[in-house]
Structures are given as C-alpha cells and as structure tokens.
Image (cartoon, rainbow, N blue to C red; front, side):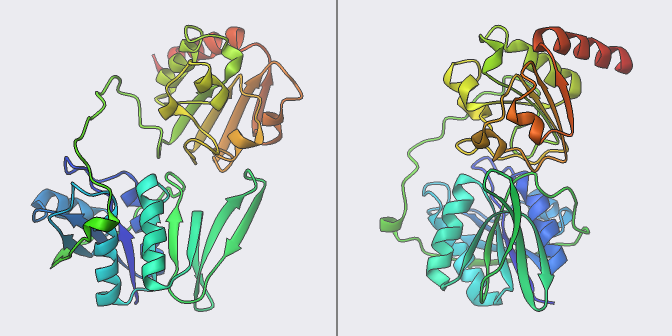
Amino acid sequence: MSHVLVLVEISHRGHIADSARGLLALAARLGDPVAVVATREPLADDVVAKLGSLGAAQVYQGRSDAAGTALVAPQVEALAAAVAALSPAAVLVSHSYDGREAAARLAVRTGSGVLVDAVNVRAEDGRIIANGSIWGGNYLVDSATTGMPVITVRPGAVDESAPQASAQVTAESVTVDAATAGVIDSYNDAPEVSERPSLLGAKKVVSGGRGFGSKENFALVEQLADALGAAVGASRAAVDAGYSPQTTQVGQTGVSVSPDLYVALGISGAIQHRAGMQTAKTIVAINKDADAPIFEVADFGIVGDVFTIVPQLVEAIKARSA
C-alpha cells in the first residue's frame, strides 16, 4: 500500500494535538499511515507509543534546532523531507492555523494541489477524493487534484480510530531557512480555568448568542454545557458583545466544529455561524423567533425563551444523571 503522511502537531510541552487521531484514521483508509513530526530533541518513548496507539506504523521525525523557536517552517521542512523519501499518495494535515499554512507552503514546494477543510476522504478510481462543506454548509462537494493532494481536514469531523500499531521511528535532520520563518520569542500558556472539553474537536458543544443580553446571563450556556459535559461556544455577536472569549467563537471567522451534538441557544443562525457548525451530526436549536434561520438546519427545534427552557433542561439532565 502507498504511504499517506499525516502532520502531527506537538506542543512545546510535548502534547500531541487531538486532531492526530482522526487524521491517522483517515490515512489508514487510504494506505499506510505515517506520522510526521518536527522536533528539536529525540522523541520520548511515551510519544512514540502514543502515536502507535493512534495508528501510526511509522513515525518520520524531522529534527531541527529551529523546532519550537520558529513558526511552521520546521513542520514544512519535515513534510518535504518525508515526501522526498517516501513518495506518498497524499498528505493530511489539520485545518488549524498552523496546519493550513504548512499545507500551503508544502504544496508550493512540491507543486501539489491543496484541498481544504475536508470533512471526509476516500479513494476512488485511483484518485483520492476529499469531501467538503461549502457555501456556509449548504452544499457537500467532492474535490480532487492531479498528483499528490495535500488535504486539510476539519477538526472533529472524523469519529473513528485507526488500528493500533507498533511505531518505528525514522529520524532525519532538516534545515530551516531563517528568512522563511517567524520567530517564537516566548510562550505564554493560558491557564486551565475549567475542566470543560476543548472546543476544537469536542463531541458536544453548547453555543450561545446575542439573545442572552449580558455576560451574566450567558452563564446559562455554561450551565447547560457542564450538565452535558460539553464545550462552550458562542456566536460572533455574543463574542463581540463581550459575553464570551474570542476563543469560543464558532463560525466562518472563528472555529469550525463537527461534533456529535451541537446545541444553539439564542442564536439566529446567520450563514457565517452556520458555516462553522452545520456538519454537526445532530443540531438542537432553541430560539424565540420561529423564523430564525437556525431552524433550517436544526434536527430538533424549540420555539421559546431560553431563560425559561434552559434552566428546566439543566434540571432535567441533572435529575436523570442523579
């Protein structure tokens, strides 16, 4: 089988990004999954074991003194070296900020086409097809390119795992041209302020909109999210109004999510918001406006006041789990 490269993002603390599981699962459908990482030091045994448990039979490590001190360029060099060494059928990366830049740079370097924001991939008639959601989620389209495709995959879109493997590491030194990379001066890790799931890749998301009227009222969104064990999201209007941090923004100019369950509270459902959540498997909407566009994509809809319905919903969920 052909190799399929997966760019695995690893934080400066050595944590593997949650996107790795889904990317390696997709790679296993298409060929032999190869995890590509860019680091300064040799990979720790627990990191190699983790990548193997996620389905990587091979780990291609691009070692560079610039890893951790330069933005994206070390990952691009590691990918380019892996492409040259393994002649893969495709390259998969997360549709994250770093992933998108790495995909674009690699495509220019290798003369490849880029297929962006895929929610699924498949092999068909000797080609690799990416399935994407476009025009605010109103259409699902198939796309392909000649030669080796570089595909960015929406985080959370894939709910499966590749068979476990015993990962073998191939380490190669790569050189980063300082002129092509932004420099990381320091890291300022945001403190963990809750035990809620991260929005990116969460299986359940509860989002609130401008209809809550204030930051204090937005606490209802957090209460329902905690009752469901869900991540908290917000519409752009709610973020702009200061009800929730920008990191919770879901939509065209925020985070794109594909959870199993998406609950939209007091969100009208403008196309910019729907573009970031419409591929959720089940959508529940609560809004007092029966004509709100969010009901066009909702699987279940309740027309009513969130201040009346949400507290009752929270109590019902707590009662069932007691």
